[in-house]
Image (cartoon, rainbow over all chains, first blue to last red; front, top):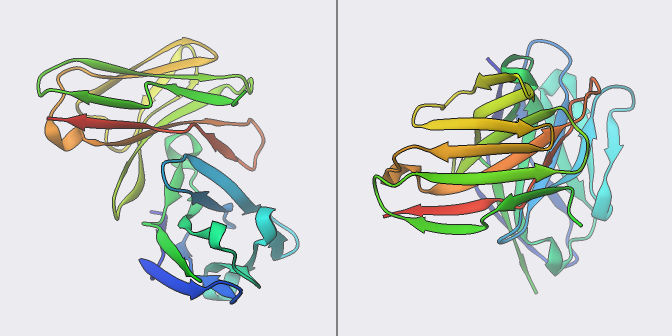
Length: 114
Length: 113
């Protein structure tokens, strides 16, 4: 069965510092991969997605992610974090069963210190 | 206006009460989903629907039922609410493309006392 692991429950970075959020997945075929962000009291907003092609994908708000098949990873990066990036981030993989549901990781809470 | 809306946004109810959460979408998608979010567990699928006549159980459907009243409307019911159904509930729609991007509503925060 598909699974997604986000090893870091909490991460704290200084404003202006770079950020990398880790995501590892388990999936037999070429995965469809997603990163969503959830701001406090808000729903889930899609940051970026990978389906095929270029393994480095660009998203909204200056985020990017790199798909590495050999490492089964899809890490999210941002070169310079802003205080408004404080939120919870979810990595997800598209699964063929249950109507092509999304399998989510447990999330990583990002705190930004000034 | 938001593409996926959920009502109510917040609800407090008592054990044993029946409650309905509603979801509407203007994206024209056929596929709709209900997930619940619990701290540290991410989101888990409750029910999904491919169209008005096609409704399917997800991973954690016990204690829940759904109704697809129209292509744009998908409701989740708790027939007899219990405290461990306290959670944040999300509705999502999915486009028909192979990529399967899902678009989420703002969520309904439910507290069962």
